[in-house]
Image 1 (cartoon, rainbow, N blue to C red):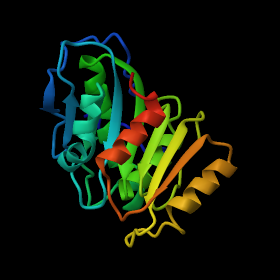
Image 2 (tube, rainbow, N blue to C red):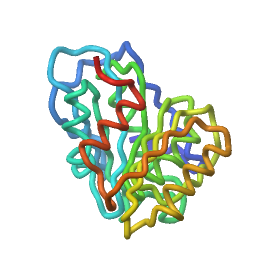
Image 3 (cartoon, one colour):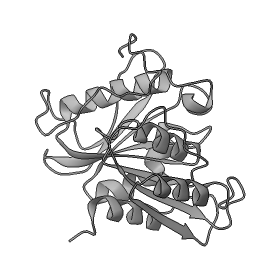
Image 4 (cartoon, rainbow, N blue to C red):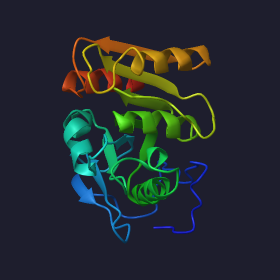
Length: 227
């Protein structure tokens, strides 16, 4: 992992593309070797190597990369989408735990490794709960990398900067008792729409959850319906 990456501005330098220089990542789940205690997993759909979309997904507070893959991996890989997930260094993401830095550097190093072995056509950043807030905040600062931001039950948005105009999809349950919809998802969606972003907001009858139907809706918004 590149220890010298300043990361405090939230800027990601890795740029996955369609012509990776290294051997292809195999189908299935691979643990990336980033050194130290950093943890990152990448799930590659079955089939021969070929260009595919990449979804980077951030877990909720207290979660892990494995939980991110459990939440979205099956639906995404069945759709032909690769998924990259990292584990936050602390109990939640650095933006919420003292300031951007360590987690940004880990994510950048993970993206760099994925770029070496996976042909990527387009990239989105998503997350659940604290991870949803993180995806929105970090994603707005990296619109040159992420064309879409997919936030499940986010609490807030606090970008360190704004680059480009990524499309935004937000889903929030009307019975969410962890992050109430009125002051969280609904408010975030309204503020981003008012700032001129293309926002799709899905308010559903449910709690603080990620369901396969919601993952499908997020992917449809990003990639268009399958067919």
